[in-house]
Length: 370
Image (cartoon, rainbow, N blue to C red):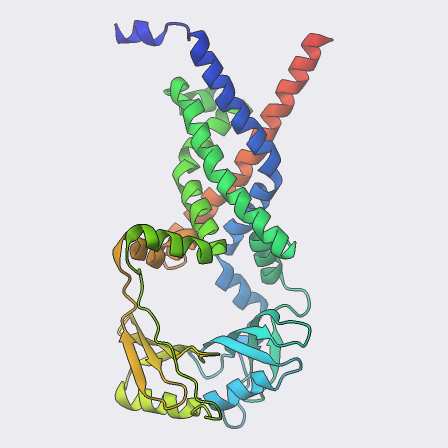
């Protein structure tokens, strides 16, 4: 009985609905195909971003240990005294004495500030190395993946394309559903481009949607987080204290802040510092037995204002705490990373096979007309 109903020819309304879904899938795929293909391909390689970067820039992790190490305050002053001056937004503290400091910086220019990206510093010589200076494989991959090598406009196109990827994957599932069953058998036996497109789409469907949504979150986070927190009804993370600035008052030395923290929390490694530009408190990140500990310090007195374990609150907090890990799978073992990279390449293969199926259909239609 059930089989007989399944074998009934589709009604006109069903055919019409399927045609609408097909054209949506078809045109969205054509419009965003190239950006999606590039983002997925570079994303697969960037699963191993840290490995690629360390291989390409060995000199940053094999420093000659000569002379005395610069203090944290001297490191920050070296960035500030660069030409043009560099404002440190986050300073990564190296794990080993022969590793460079790594800082995400903003260039201070009279015509307007602009992002300088990741800038490294040799703690023995004070030499600065900009990631954006000269050709770099890892920098090129990152630039294509995040901005399609097109700056701010390219970044928005990449984000919109990622959103389109999630939508087309969902539409693909709708198109596949009436024809479900024997998907992998057809791909193995017939081996046509459409069969492999359907089979691969089924395998990579959920991972590609996860990659797409988390990727969009990276780009539009400033707009997304306030919206989600309003829906949740309360903040997802600890609200940082606001500093009252007294005119003429000088900031305390960062060395004093670091010494105070080390004395109070011995054995806990400082992994990063946000110096507290403007009205923000100094934010110090520590590795506390594998857990992240965050201290908010007054930049004018050096006193601790707030201590947080970094725990997020509510469903929004859970997503905020995990979306980066789901996007890259960087914190998982090598097998998971390789699998995630292959699934990301699957997005590029889906674009290629989808476009190929479309071209073949156009040729057949053109042949029938002629």
